[in-house]
Length: 329
Image (cartoon, rainbow, N blue to C red; front, top):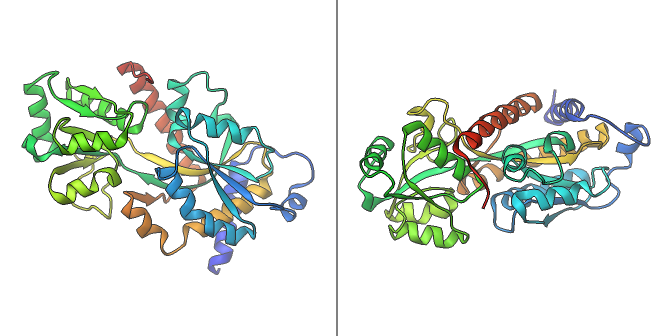
């Protein structure tokens, strides 16, 4: 079986498994006429963000596969809710998609209970793309070299040390989870300006942070910051010396992910075509190294495995949010 046939089989399997309902003409006829105009890929966060990087990385490959331009449309606001609602307000025919994130499934329902949609029932996954880790980092002036030393230091000064982690994000949950596991008392600081957060972290004003790789990379490379761990279950291939927090704290996982989503009700054959196009875009030889620079990696998961991941994540985050009293600003 050649590569093209394999992609088609995977796409049809994923499309059939994740689609729920169809409407109008038979799916084969609909797929034959799809797409008839440019496809809009709506992004939940601004230009330069993780979801935006992913969307702009795969759009050219999807355009080539579909024979129509895939246009990236940034609709930031309310943790992704603005973008999600805008997509749901369009025709469910595959021409308007969402670059979805973990937040709309397992964070926003608890932090924004009146968002006006439910990702679990209103969207289907076309294809998972990539995941990103949250990095635990400290200013080198703190004098700690690993998580055990950090825990000991924080416990010796209960409530006195500050940690940077923006509210309502995987970073926030990673900080809360780490504190809960280790019985820590520290003061979390949430900056509205990400650049200010990194500047003050590098200056040692807030000596601890849960952050993304692009934000901290220059300061890690300059020696001002030290990486202590990453929140994904396994180490990143591009940063093999950085331990996964799960190595010291079994079961620790608090990562972000990105997937192309379509409104539920999109015809199965259209979903299959979109899935095939997305899979083809994932295979672009320059995508993996481009993601590595951003502290991301491709997700190797089929529809069933990814669905199981989402369900597991929703439960874990719901428990943490309730137990720690986490709220949006």
